[in-house]
Amino acid sequence: MRSDKRVFRTVALGLLLPSAMLVLHSCNNNPVKETPKEPAADTGNAGLELPQGFGALRFADSTGNARHLTVSQNGVVYVKLENPVNGNAIVVLKDKNGDGRADERSAFAPFGGTGIAIKDGYLYASSNTSVFRYKLNDQQEVADPQHPDTLVSGLIDRGQHNSKSIALDNNGNLYVNIGAPSNACQEKDRTKGSPGMQPCPLLDSAGGIWIFKANELNQGYHNGKRYATGLRNVVGLDWNNQANALFVMQHGRDNLHDFFPELYDAKQSAELPAETMYKLHEGFNGGWPYIYYDQVQQKKIVCPEYGGDGKKAVTDKYDDPVATFPGHLAPNALLFYTGSMFPERYKNGAFIAFHGSWNRAPEPQQGFFVAFVPFKDGAPSGKWEVFAKGFAGKENIAAPGDAAHRPCGLAQGPDGSLYVSDDKMGTIYRIVYKP
Image (cartoon, rainbow, N blue to C red; front, side):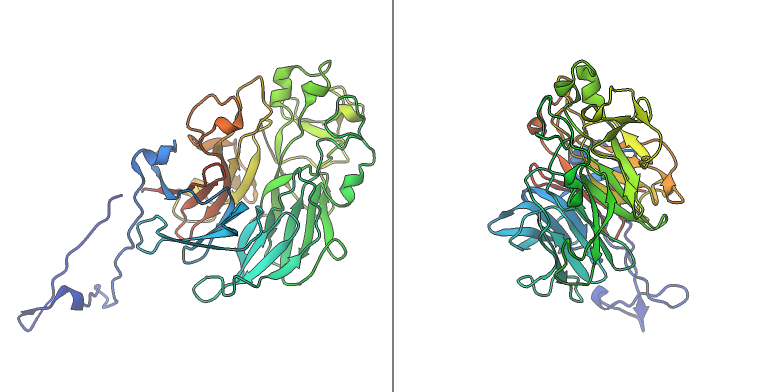
């Protein structure tokens, strides 16, 4: 990137002072601070395709299977790993020389998982059963990495959909996703011909968002509260300050053609149901496992395990999405952009990291990109668009393992740059705008 440099010479009493001793003043006699060095994009934008004016660089590589990440006010990047590397699953990345890339790293925390966030002087991080909290010092660094506070524990982990993604509001509340360990709550999960259970017993402890206090220790199901239900699995979620509400991205169900070939062909099964964005409220019900949202018909459709035929719709009872996307893209992160680096149209809009899924066969796998949804006054105001692509390294992906990188987490830096984590190779991308 171009960086303007000015050379000032000050002559006092006929002597030229050494540059190291210069005191620079503007016209009103206030000190003039040198503009911080802007990070330069990598050649070829680190392999990404971006809108005009944007650039990308690799902030770090080989961090581990990087899930979500967060950035402190002074630019320290904390990355949550799904599995510990050398016994540690929170990686700390610092850019000490100001070139836009991490040149110092350390790690702590023995628990793997997905969720991580900074709020009100604390670093919050989750395992697949618990949520912990670390106090930050004046340098925005974890003061005591060996002794976190345990805020929540005892949440179910049955292997499937077990990541406990987190978000915090401005009133001291902590929101935790507890994904359903199931596809459609059948008596025998993912088994052709097995009927759906109604009512679904999993909804007592999973399949929704639970709310806890962000400053209370030793919480669990006994003193938490189910804030929203009928959500199969939410990995990406974020608090929207304009709407004063939590927004989430739901992973839609699978196996429509596999289990009901008389109702759905392979192409329909690859594209249905929609991946959905919801605006939550207390008592919200997304309808899982009884219904799914069909973005083609723009209707809530009764699932075939519960008597549906691909057309039978429900008009009320369950909440509608505020935005929809093609099926099986796997939205793993949601971020509302509040920075000032990007052009004004991005302000308060939503970035979504689509991780890419496994079940669009025989169609090519899709996802592996970051999308953008414009917002106005806390609500979507236009169609979604692909913002950053090229993570996969090639166009036609037969299986998700063929992708070079898979975007998973999003975070905003203090300068307004956008960080994207990759849980395939552990790359941390940084996207900047060059005015």
